[in-house]
Image 1 (cartoon, rainbow, N blue to C red):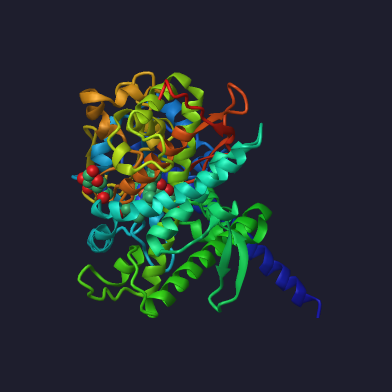
Image 2: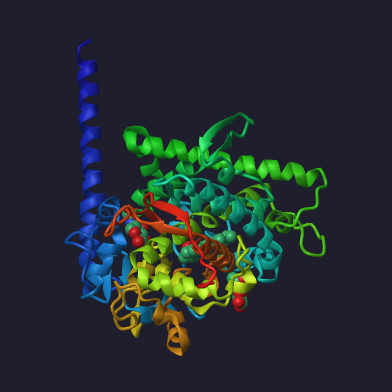
Amino acid sequence: MSFLPLQIIMLGYIVFALIVVYLLIEFLVVPVYQYFRDPKGLRRFPTLDRFAGFTNLSFMIEAHRGFRSKKLSTLHKIHPVIRTGPNSLSYGDAQAIKDIYGHNTRCIKDGQYIVTAGTHYHLADVIDRHDHGRKRKVLSSAYALKNLEEWEFKVADKTARLIKHFDAVATVPESTVDYRAWTNFFSLDAIADIGLSHRLGFLDAGDDCCLSERLDGFATEVNFRECLYAVARAQSGIVWSYDWYKTLVKITRAISPYYRILWKLSDNWDGIVLHLARERLKRYEAGEKLDDFFTSLMEDKGGKIQSLEWGEIVAEVNIMMNAGSTTTAIAMANVMFQLLKNPRHLAILREEIDSVVEPDETVVSYDKVRHLPYLRACLDESMRLFPPTAHGLPRVTPEEGWVINGDFISGGTTVAMSAFVAHRDEKVFPEPEKFKPERWLGEEGKALQPYFVAFSAGARGCIGRNISYLEQTVLLASVLRRYEFELPHPGWEPERMETMNLHLGPLPLKVWRRKFSQESD
Ligand code: HEM
Ligand SMILES: *[C@@H]1O[C@H](CO)[C@@H](O)[C@H](O)[C@H]1NC(C)=O
Ligand SMILES: *[C@@H]1O[C@H](CO)[C@@H](O)[C@H](O)[C@H]1NC(C)=O
């Protein structure tokens, strides 16, 4: 009877030994062999660190430090191209933008978009050119410029609600607003209204409590931002190994308390989207005629039914509420911070705004401020310094290879350029760390536009760019016209953390009403 357990123990040893051998081959022998075989000739490039040529783990560790683009921008001061993993290159020379992202590029979105995708692709993560073209056509009529006028009243309504709160705070001496949180309530309320005709009511409540719904219809109360931000935080930690991503999700869910919380919140995020989509569908089915993105997903301008799958519609609602809110809120908080840090520029901007706004105007009309050159220059300069999406958007070279910045790169190689890095190319942006809105003015400023990639570029550039400028312009002009703000102390800096976006922490500002004397007005 006693030999049976022995056999089992033996078997155990053998299995264990096989696993060790497998792991050694998979993680040591093959990577080292591949590195020296170097079929794509990537060994000529300097690496992120000693191990980056062998493993994606190097970049994964760098990502966990919380500001990978800053690290890259430091390295790119010396090296135009850096190998960040066995099959990936990071670019630092702004001239490479057109080859990687421009309209004529043959590079397409890489496998990272596949591993993070849900059951259905949405406009931002679909890779196939044909499929993307179809989706972009469906949505471009919804996002087009002529609609901006139709939506201005929705943005104006959110501005008025934010002002209502700021007015109340401004009467209490020494009290503060967290401008980071309030601009986020603003951008969320705005996109929910523009996209789904939905009233989230975050600006009225002063928080972001909302409902998350399971497939079976059971709903719980959650915080919108907490759930949304958890998705990017979890993904941006482990997404660097595409082959192991799904496994890493399972492992981190099982053994890491930090990740378990993030994945739980990420599930709640899916539930928020599902809830919003279902609520909106009910209204559509009840026959309500509403002018929003959701309607364009259901039918075209002529009323012809689009017949998209429900999963695809939910995916589009997901990216709309995600890409359409966080980035704009980050941009709004950043530009306020830059202006308060640079009072000389703030004074010039105030003068420009004051010159067009009527004394009794509370919410500034878009028409009056949309073409103000200095206002636009301040927004762009702030997004240059801190692009809300700093993630080096990964593209893969076509099978036959592709020339990037005059250098041939083999097919199937991942290439990327972070906007944070591109915007610090000294040849294009002298004194890159300085906030200098002037650089965007006049003909010289126009010539810089091809190197401004906060919204990326080419066929996969941001579709919400004009909506974002509408929101940013109206809000900034309205609050600068009405209030004085002050940072906690001179030299104060916000916390920054890079996930897929480059987040900033709370921005607590003292706020009070501006005084206008008859003479100076
Ligand atoms: C300051 C604000 C914004 C910034 C910095 C920004 C940035 C970007 C960037 C960098 C991309 C390219 C992503 C990639 O290649 O993976 C992108 C795409 C996209 N953005 Fe924005 N975005 C902003 C506002 C918005 C808004 C307000 C919306 C929606 C109303 C939006 C919706 C989208 C969508 C749907 C795509 C995918 C487009 C496509 O691939 O055809 N974004 N955005
Ligand atoms: C490492 O990353 C590259 C892209 O950057 C990807 O092609 C490759 O599959 C990854 N390797 C593993 C083992 O996941
Ligand atoms: C934004 O507006 C400009 C005109 O000001 C237009 O040329 C461009 O196509 C619009 N972009 C998008 C993504 O709708």
